[in-house]
Image 1: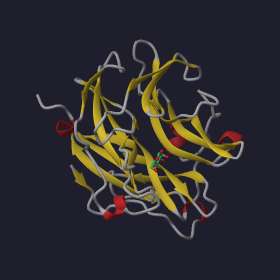
Image 2: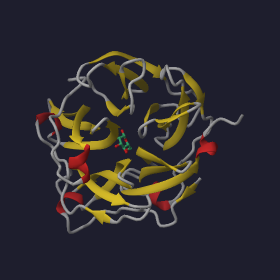
Image 3: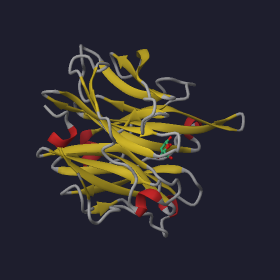
Length: 297
Ligand code: BMA
């Protein structure tokens, strides 16, 4: 793997009040020959909003929106919209994110879903459809939707602490068969919590999914699993060691130290570009050959 030499690719902009403090944990999607990056931005008021940047080669940012492209709309997300993940389904791009609110003076987070027509997305008309709370009232985050139906159903991965869980849907509105399918591992870098990173990538060998694992020392690393193509709850392979762990200064020092956290990846010519937040402060990218992520034959 290689970290992009000019990491971080995005940093806060002090003169933009909505993204003055931290920019991190971005979704990434390749449409129309460009990589579109929707990142979590925290500004002067401490609220998370979603910013937008676009890149032709996946590394150099060509353009960045001066205003947020998605902001809190309702009480469920009063305190912020965090950690977006994007999936192209037909002519819509579905965004799953963490909605943060306060209940009885305590922070409460849950998953929220919205979508936008691809044409509107590409022409930067940020006409998002209504927000849905698929698990209203359940403390849950790290939601990502598969890019196609499996066995006639939409599939979502999400995390009810500390496990990675699955849910199914016929219409992207009502979700059922919610259960855990992957637990943290004892005595490992992912012994405390696990959750999905970016959108799963379909390969002949199965679904490739990058995930984050947290250790008891609160170090956030990334690993990889391969899932059966027809049964995404069947784990064919789970990496023993992380594929990325905090090493550089921009991963070790920041708002939350020792964090690499990803919400987006794209496959370009057998290379996987993994977009990740460093120390909950800046946005970075690292590149992997497909064959280095897959189990050795
Ligand atoms: C997780 C999420 C991420 C964050 C990570 C490390 O629970 O809140 O947004 O990057 O913790 O602080």
